[in-house]
Image 1: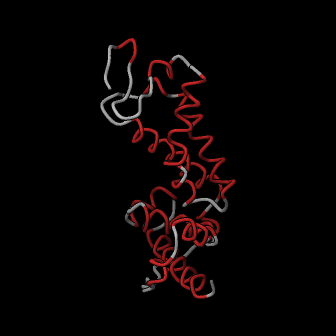
Image 2 (image 1 turned 120 degrees about the horizontal axis):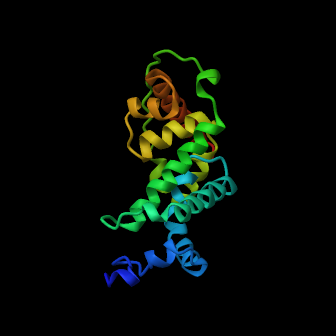
Length: 183
């Protein structure tokens, strides 16, 4: 609910932006608990383990609390937090791998994989399978399939060519198909 500027809260979450801006640890803890479960899926798609995903998410919340003064109350707090989590995750991805040196792949045909096994898996099982992919392919797969980015956007984000992005997507699909066949 919106109240006077001395006690600003979001309409749906009863979060006091003013307390967050003042560095109130109890309010930070409440926000962390409120959004942690909603946000953990973002770094899970790009990390190699739950521990790594939690580390990324903790860094993201640290950034949220450091930059809360930049939050404009024209949008949802959850959307603002999600943007920071995604940005933190992409920073992690860029630091972790140097794609240009690892792979120099030209235009490679994209292989389409049809598999209905995904419909039988839980979300956690799918994340586990995605985490078993090579990091570069995992990141491109998540950006393309889950987050809906185009190859051109992925190439810019990861400093790779569009052809390399397409290759990683094809590679990820083939490897996921194998992982799904063998349990």
